[in-house]
Image (cartoon, rainbow, N blue to C red; front, side, top):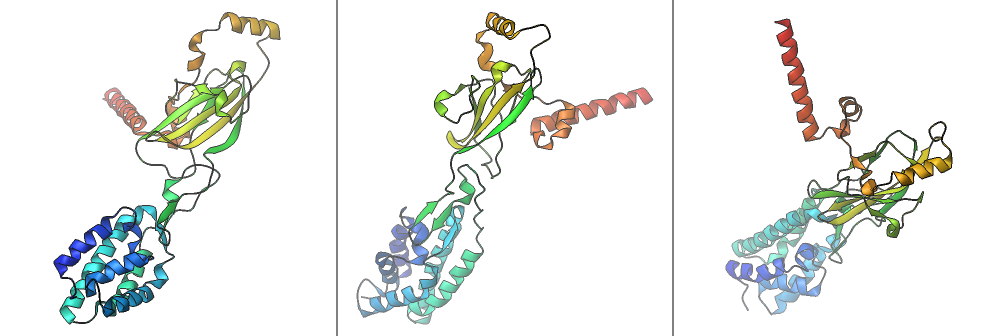
Length: 313
């Protein structure tokens, strides 16, 4: 049977490339079926040349069978693979030579393309689902992420009674740029734990920074912050807050307990609040300079400049 025409090759190539389970790893031709389908584009669906084509294809691309790439670079690899197949078909049609004669050159170009892809980022311990480190393995046509736990180690924070406690829900690895949310929870009673069954929601905080002020003995316990991307958890951080310091002068422990019971209200669930930094705190913490804070600083600077100009005039 004669080789397939360019139009026919595209028709055969289309289901091969866009089949979801195989297109991303077709370039290494790890299975008999993939090599067979590809050679049928050049020499037809049967005949002695079909075996020669498969052998040449296996030999040319043998060094790429164990390649691993950045998972996000699959699209670039897909485009390069498609262009390579069409170029091979055009060369075979124009020169009248067997298509497999150009396999070594095509394999060398594919190897160069792979080397130019964006590298996979290393895993950053100790915790978190790190999508930027996801690797795609050609030999098995599958991907993996870092084998790290979702739960991060507990961070200890000691604060004197009456002061403020500031929690920063940040991780060392790169997070997605959009659709990020933060969920805060609290396990009271002085518990230092990572058991999620002890935690209850704290609806008063929604960003990556939160604080408690003034800190009281009832705040002693473990606070948890869950970082979510599109409602999927990426990391769970824990902060154990230890409150130190004596009660106010003249009060016994029993008096303090009685007063706290008498003044207790359901507002305890809102004891943690979003961090709204002052100007000095913003300057001391450059990472807190969000877009809204930058606009606020610019407005303050403009107001001060205008006031000085009026006074001088």
